[in-house]
Image (tube, rainbow, N blue to C red; front, side):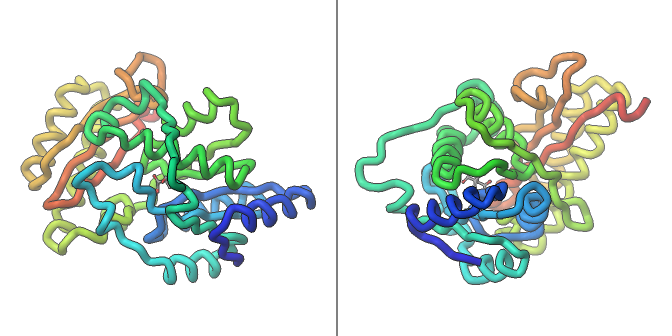
Amino acid sequence: MQTVRQPDALRAAVAAWRAAGERVALVPTMGALHDGHMALVEAAKRAAQRVVVSIFVNPKQFGPGEDLAKYPRKELADSRMLSNAGVDLLWLPPVEVMYPEGFATNVSVSGVSEVLDGAHRPGHFDGVATVVAKLFNQVKPDVALFGEKDWQQLAVIRRLVADLDLDIEIQGVPTQREDDGLALSSRNAYLIPEERAQAVALPRALGLAERAIAKGTDPEAALAQARETLTAAGFAIDYVALADAETLGDPIEGRPMRLLAAARIGGTRLIDNLAVNPAALD
Ligand code: PAF
């Protein structure tokens, strides 16, 4: 695996693959890799001949008071995992390469960015859209893969790609979970054992609400029950909501829906989501 920190070397490697007619996949990450990321890498290997993984802890997507400074950084272990997985190139741009002196551009996707996590983390999705647009331009992949755990992020990126006519296929990869159902996340490392035990209430509450809504329970009643369960388990809730799966606006009959939640246990903010598919129970 090549490890590259400068855009010229990245471009040369990708250009050589393209000249050989090879398809290129990009897996953007912020590092602290876990099995969820490795599922993205495996999907990338199925989607293309060459796989690039980027690791960049993007300061623009962290708000003031968020966990930028303490976000786990594990470059050596990450690099080993990627190399063992058969990744072709690790793109590790320094912050001054991504955001040189004078950098002044902000990519903002309105609508889908403004609700749910966007409302609770102002500027977060602008930071994501800006860095992802840069990564797409730097790597010029045929296909890019993102985890469905960050469902709203995936929806924002799909909107960005459609609106800007970017010729990049976006693949969502299903959430990877611990045996008890907790979604894998780099932020799970912050949980002390007691919080880790309580955290399982998040996927359980969402699972119960999803099944209730799918069976025809009034969504508001199912969401209220989920909020109660989470509060009883010690969570401070940012939101538990049922939304249109694509726009993240209010659900519209006949269109795919998604159940999404964000809540804090101790100092750790966790997110999760599930598809709600009434037809699946017919
Ligand atoms: O999902 C992430 O790890 C990040 O938001 C991403 C897509 C790499 C952008 O920094």
